[in-house]
Length: 86
Image 1 (spheres, rainbow, N blue to C red):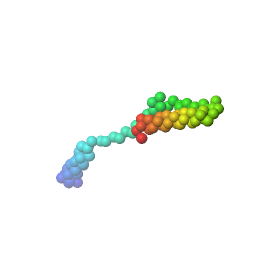
Image 2 (cartoon, helix red, strand yellow):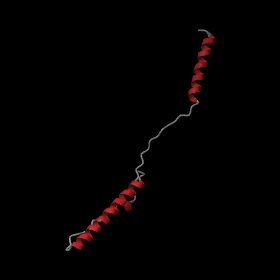
Image 3 (cartoon, rainbow, N blue to C red):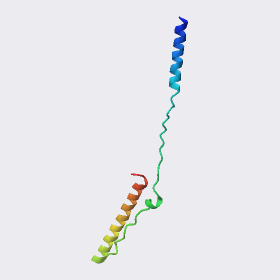
């Protein structure tokens, strides 16, 4: 082979190697992070006991207590959604 051709091919290959090696290498690392909700949001909401209701007023009080418990449970769920960033 011709010396100039060999020298030209060598320089070309070295130029290509230099061109490829000058770019920074980007490495993407996927990491799974589990976030637990705060403990006070995970505690169960007590269900009102209506077994001793005798009058309509007692039943009304029981219904209002149940609605209040439901409101607390929904507030806890909203706080959990907010804590995990939904």
